[in-house]
Image (cartoon, rainbow over all chains, first blue to last red; front, side, top):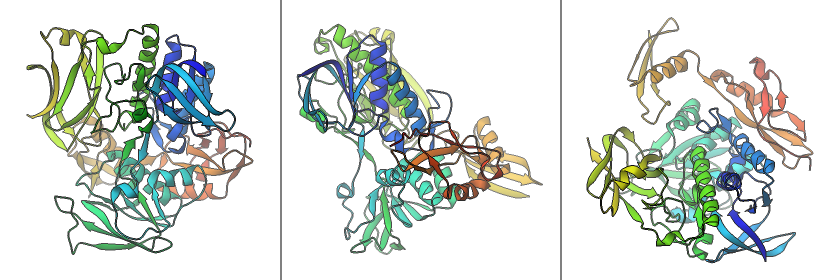
Amino acid sequence: MLNYDIVIIGGGPAGLAAAISAKDSGVDSILILERDKELGGILNQCIHNGFGLHTFKEELTGPEYAGRFIEQVYDRNIEYKLNTMVMDISSDKVVTAMNRTDGMIQIQAKAVILAMGCRERSRGALNIPGYRPAGIYSAGTAQRLVNREGFMPGKEVVILGSGDIGLIMARRMTLEGAKVKVVAELMPYSGGLKRNIVQCLEDFGIPLKLSHTVVDIEGRDRVKAVTIAKVDSNNKPIPGTEERYECDTLLLSCGLLPENELSKSAGVDLSMVTNGPVVNDSLETNVPGIFACGNVLHVHDLVDYVSEEATTAGKNASDYIRNTASASSDKQVKINTECGVRYSVPVFVRPDKMNDKLTVRFRVGNVYKNVNLCVYANDTLLMKLPKKVMAPGEMEQVILLKSKLNEIADLNTITIKIEEA
Amino acid sequence: METRELNCIVCPMGCPITVTIENNEVTSVTGNTCPRGEEYAKQEVISPIRTVTSTVKVSGGEWPTVSCKTKSEIPKGKIFEIMDSLKGVSVQAPVKIGDVLIANIADTGVDIVATSNVEVL
C-alpha cells in the first residue's frame, strides 16, 4: 500500500489547480492520477481561444491555458501518474488504481480531491429514434479526432444541441472543409455563449433552429440523412414540420454530466440536479476528507472558475489534513434554491467555520429579464441584486459574507431566489 | 446609407444592435445598452477581426498534429485564405508553445504560432 497525504483524481484543469494550491499550502505528499497519456485534460483538445480572461487577463487557447498550470506542477515537483485508471475509492480513502507499469496499486490517502470532470450525454441517453449507423459522434469525440488525431470524421454535418462544444465544432468542421448544414436545439434558447453563436454560426451562415430536435436518422452502415422537426411547448415533435438533411455525420452536443461513479463507490452523496457531490462551504463532501471541484462537482462554462474553485479545494484539503477534527460536528446551514434558481454549490454553509467571503455559484432554469436576485438568511433579506438578464447557459454567483450571516440570530436557512422587479 | 443588424457579444445581455453606415463610416449605433456595445458594433461593421485557431501536421511527434493560432487578430475576410495556407504545411517535432510555425500567414503580417507542445515520439 502506498501512502500520500492528498490523492487527486484527474489531471485536468481542476486537478492541476488543486494540486498547485495544496502544495503551496504546505502539503508535500501529493499524487495526481490521470487516465490519459498527458496532463491537461479536455483543454488539450480545446484549441480555440477565449480561455483565461479572468485568470491571466489575456485570451489563451485551451492547451496554452493547461500548459501554464502544467508548468507550475512541474516547477513544484508534484508527483503524477499518467495512463492510470482509478477503479475504486473507499469511504476510508483507499484509492485503487491500475496502469501498465505498476499493475494494480492501492493508495491510502489522508484526503482525496475528486477532479474527474464530466462526460457528454450520449445518443443512448437522448432516445433518438432511427438506425444506428456509423457517423454519429459526440461533439467532444469529433473534437478529439479533428484536433488531436488529425482525422476528419465527416464531410456533411448536422449538429443536435447548441452547447458550446457543438458550436465550436460547427466552426472547426467548416474551417476544415466540411459543410455544416444546420444546428438543431430542442430548447427555445441556446445553451451556448452568445459569443459562440455569433463567431461560430453567424460568421459562417450556419442556421440555428431553436425548438427543433432529431426525429429520424437514416442509413444502415453510414448516416445518409437526418430529419429534424419543430417541437411544441412539451418538447414533442409537431407532425408536418419535418425537414430532411442529407448528411454523413451527426454530432451530439446535448449537455454534460459530471462523472461520479467513483464518488458513489466512496459513499459520496450526489445532488439530483447537478449529478455532482453535495458539498459544504469548504467543498468537502459528506465523506470526511473527500473534496470535489471542477466539472465533477457541477458543469462550468468558464475554466477560470474551475481553476478558482479547485484552488479553494486544494487549500481546504490541506487544512483538513493539518486539523483532522471532522467538520461533520460543525453546525451546517442549508442553502435553499427556489423560484428559478436550480441549485447551488455549495449546498451547506458552516457559519462558524466558513471563510470571511464565500462564493456561491448556481444556475437558473430559464431566461429571465429585469428581475431581482434575492438572498435571504432565515426571513431577513440579505441581498437584492437587480439583473438585466439571466440565462441557463451562464453560471451566476453571489458572495456571502461571514460577518453578515453571523449577525442573524438562530440562522437555520439561507435562500437564493429570483423575484420580479 | 446602409443598416446592419448585429447581436452584441460583449456580455450575456446580447443586445440586438442596429448600425447605420454611410461612406464606410458609422453614423449611428442603436439598441446597445452600454458604451462597450457601441465600440464592438463599430469595429464589427467597419473591420471585423478574429483570431484563427487550427492545427498543422507534425512529423516524428507523439501526436500527428499540433494546435496553432494567429498570434494576433486578423481581418475576418482572411479566415479561409489562412486555412488554405495551413493545408500543406508539416512541421518537425519537437514543437513548443509559442514557436513560429509560419511567418506572415497569407500576407496578413501575422505569424502562426504553436499553442501546444509536441514531443519527439
